[in-house]
Length: 352
Image (cartoon, rainbow, N blue to C red):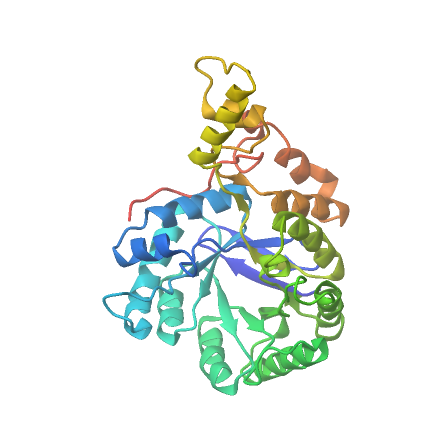
């Protein structure tokens, strides 16, 4: 049975067909997050701290670390990204105790992250271009770590799943030339948006089965890609993830956290309620209000996708006796550390 083993200094996460689905938290990534990018350039790591703690509390078993900020003061990522990666990795592994995924397209940043990382992280990523494989695979071998293999090469991303399978097979075979076993390759078959390609879901389920049955490799994906551009993205994601799991997918890079309800939304709802003549009791706090009216929470909490994943783990017999499902659904005060919808973060706290 294929098992990809990841480690922090004190904790092990296993990606495997007989294991609970591995959630790789994606939030520590400045791509598309201008505020986070500006903070990182200014040396402010407060959002990184919050995101690390919230994702682990929501159930992430691995955290992806991407320091790909294009500085306004220096647009050369080969100079700026390696030291930033080192700082972020050092900070995060001082806050939480889950394994990390070192994510960069910059060679120096990958090595900087691997040098400072405790345990056995995952590398994200290698593609089918020969130049990329010749750089990444020696690093993977040197540090004895597993790697995400993305199913595209110098011909681009193919819409044909047979082509994407062939690229994955090529990567697995080239990895073997460097002495890297198939169980240390986690293939990303590239999920297409179903809004742009109606067969995207069926394609990826078929492709994941082939990767499991013919290559014996674990798989991952950017889970939210499937719902890109569509309304009610959580509804699509909630259906996609259990279906992908039943096809053999063993992990996903995703956001495990339902973000807090913004104050503007709370104020809007209060005005709406008062306009209907409903009197809000004096002293009612915002958390009680949003819970009463079904808006969500003022605090980060596990997202609906996490609920779907935990239910699927139970249904696929990867949650013995349903203990994780029961703990997940206990009220926060009863669940204890690591359980319930607002489980507390693991690890020790440290300032940047």
